Each structure stands twice: as structure tokens, then as C-alpha cells.
Length: 217
Ligand SMILES: [Zn+2]
Image (cartoon, rainbow, N blue to C red):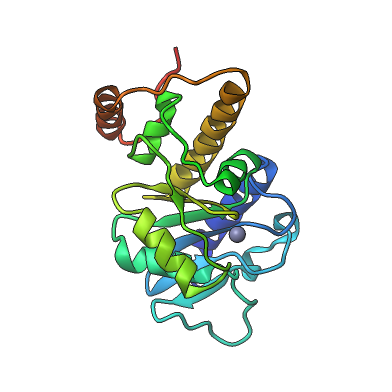
């Protein structure tokens, strides 16, 4: 089978999403850019039961060959991101609890913690609402992702993009943690938000270190 190594890596990342609590049941999806197209998780299958052969190869033109599972209903977002963003090689979409709470409020995640800088931006904005699985939703997501690597989807969830599976997956967990911190802080008061100048410095540091997670102190 072609793409065998990539299939194993994507399966591991999909299980990581589920085991880390980023997704529940069959919600969420993850993909990896491969030569000629992408590998993406299938629709409606819990990650715990997935096999490498269940992952779907979709060509650059959006074609799925015979004998494969049906791709995730949000395949358009993944395919459109790869078309428009040559820097991106992995896309994560999930409905994590705290990010989705802010997506329901249609409020952005702000720089309540410097780790939001892993997204390449001081804010994770919320894309306007569109029906799940539609080209309209994909277009809203693409527009909101301009110049950054994460956005919320109104009344829906989170999309994160990265240069590899590891970076995208870690970023998704970091963003969910920032969302939880913002939620907790807002429960007891008015959070301090780091200023533009400081966040520009943090983002430059993340870029210098190749988006590696800095030591927390
Ligand atoms: Zn979704």
C-alpha cells in the first residue's frame, strides 16, 4: 500500500487527539499532506477502532478512489487549506470543550497566556457561522486563517494548521488550554491581556525556536 508510513503517523495522531480528550466519539478529523493529495480520517468512525487502511486518500482534485471509506465531512476545509497554504502539511479539526464554548459565544481567544503565540498570532479569532461540511464554511475558515494557524468556527469548534502532524496536534492542545484558562479567568474577574508589543516578541521567539514548546517558568 502506498503512503504506508504516513498512514501510520496519521493514525497515531488521530488516536492522540482522542486519547488527549480533544475529541469525543466520532467528532473531529485530522489530515496529512502527501504527494498528490492528502490522507484524512474517515467519517463516522471512532478513532479507537480505526486501522491505517481506514484512512482515506483524496487527490489534489478532491477525488477518492474506489474501495475506500468515505472521507470526513469536513474534507473541503482540509483540501482548501493545502491548496492555499503551501506552508501547511497537517490540519486538525475538533470540537474541544473550551474552544467550542468560546465559538458558541463567538468570542476570540486572546493573549491571556503567552502560549497563544504558538499559533503565530496574538489572537485566535472566530470564523463566521456556516453549515458544517459546506464550501461556505471552508471559505470562512480560509479567510479567518489568513496570517495565523488557528481559528474558532462559530457554534462549531476549532481548526488548527501546522507544518507537520506533531506541531499541529500540540498546537491544538495548547489552544484548548488557553481557552480553558480564559474561561476560568473570566469566571472570577477580568483577565489581563498581554499587549501587542509583548506578543510580537513572544511570536518572534516561537519562530526562532521553530515552534518548539518553550520551557515553562
Ligand atoms: Zn466539526
